[in-house]
Image (cartoon, rainbow, N blue to C red; front, side):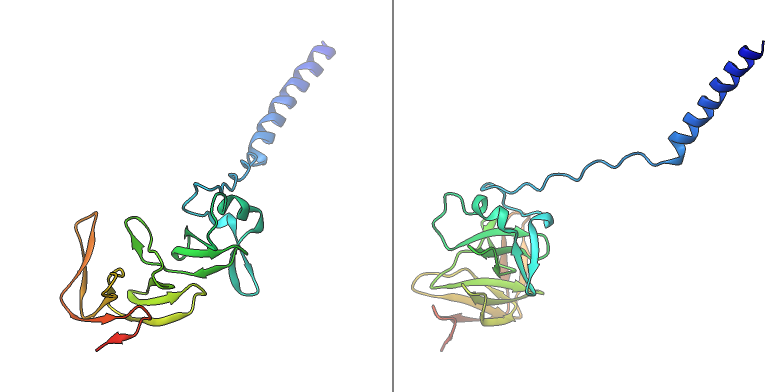
Length: 181
């Protein structure tokens, strides 16, 4: 009888301990999702980014995949905090807030690309310098033989797929970003 009581007591204790164990410790956390970056990745995850000397960089281990098959010195990718951006071969983010064109980063024309910061438009060069500071309400993509058409007082309109600017006063910027008079 004593042996049977001890056995019941031990089984009961094991049951209590198993309940305590299940509720006293949280379930193990799932490992973090892998940071996936390859030549087909258009949007870079935050885990692929790092800061060096106050500048944003893509971590070095992802650069070979980012530039695979490309002979260009810059590659465009969507970044978590600044939209379309251009990255150089060292991984440095050199141009942020690049205006989209046909669901991709806008292209450089004569070394300049359209940028949109806080709702204002300007032009940046391949080093990220703002040749035309963001001061316009809109800038159309470069047109050969014409330049960039820039507006003040215009409004952005969209039909869900396409966007355009309406109204305002329009000027032309030449291939260097200077106003044509």
